[in-house]
Length: 201
Image (cartoon, rainbow, N blue to C red; front, side, top):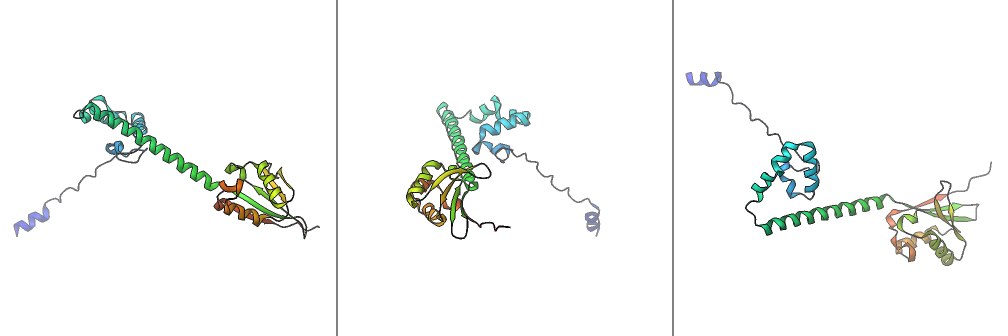
């Protein structure tokens, strides 16, 4: 009975104190694991600026000597080369991803414009974003469709190709098939628009 009363009156054990972990703002790893990421140089720069004491703890001469003291000179050089190679690879991957993302937002607009009930023109805007020479493309369309084709400025002041006649679907087909100058234009980035003639007052 007494033991039960003692257990009831004794204080409960203190809850464990949560461990505070500082994460790197560059690679998002805990500081101890930055060396396994692909941006160690940038991680070290950030740590030196934001937390100089922790930088000394992990990357001072003494800390590095303690870490790699057991490694041979060749092993140390190999480690440095591997780190540099890993960082260069990560930067190249990030650049490629950025370019891919940029291409996703680029758009080619093929607009079918009605002039009156029977006549149409087709305007193509945005080809230059995919390294298409507009003058060569205009000449290519003129020969392909045996019609007038020229580079002009649209109302927004940007260059576009205007082809006489309704050839919007033909041009879309050429892009899909990667014909001639249009092979660098991804079909996913092409939008077809139709513009009706405005009725007179």
